[in-house]
Image (cartoon, rainbow, N blue to C red; front, side, top):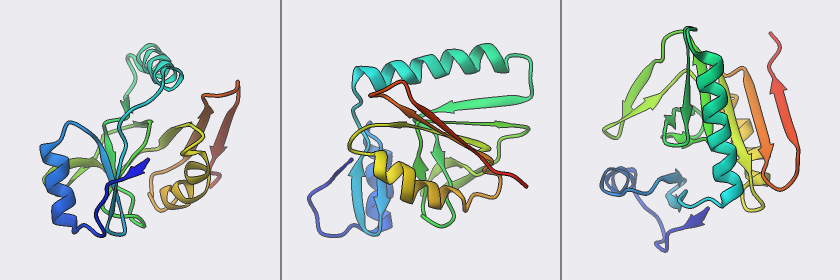
Length: 154
């Protein structure tokens, strides 16, 4: 993630940028970070996940989303991008800043890179827990054959 070079942005400026750009951006306390660009390993992992979900969710009342779906994260507004998410049942959306934002993911997936691993494991995970429907967190390393699966026990 790379911050754009302005001191502070308003939410309105962020929403306008999101609507007008083909890139994805995340907003953190007035700063905007570009989410664009992944390496070939990251891209291959997302491609494999897509195939896995397509094959395993067919005929079920479940749905998977890849990296472009915005997730509503109550403790870290307005929303975040994950590398993947899924749910069973009906998908529920809010309109935030003029765009659809998924409110009820049950599974959230992050593909770890050197630049995002610490944030994905710590801060992002902490904030994802504020999503009421959130039950599983899957962290996939793109550097090693390593997967971590967190499961919320009720």
